[in-house]
Length: 200
Image: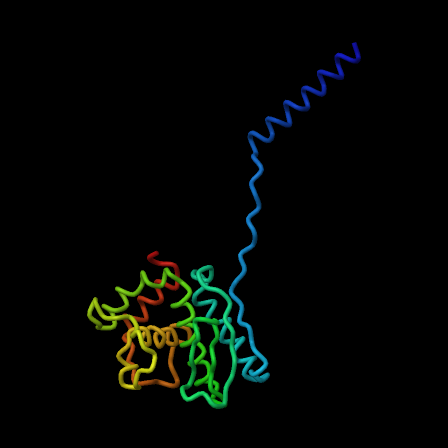
């Protein structure tokens, strides 16, 4: 009799365990999402590195809704760079000319990090038509020229560069080192909406 009771108890436990799993299925644990990292190369001195870290935090905060769309970016400093800064999409490396004021360095960093998103995040293309319209470009305007060796005057007519300058205004609220590019408030608003996850 005790043997039968024991068998029934085992079956009852199995039945209750099965019902528990049915009502509360085990869900796979999703791996934690990590934000893109700023990888600072040895050419960057301590003071510039601190400024870059601070600026990167502000940049990631602004583009938090798109942080899963782009990866890590490298930062290096150069005393010989002809331009204020540049971005190499092949290596995801931003190079900034030093020395410079904190305002100029911040603007250069954000400008080039915006290009980093542009090259790595396919979703950025969905924002372009609205940005072109807001900035006064024709709808069929080329986003960026095929060649990179453009003159300063031609650079100011490239929508991609307007977008990168708009990113400075979006992250900092101002641009202490203005260029020949004038960014309309409407264009900044388009970028802001996209950065917050609007559109696709």
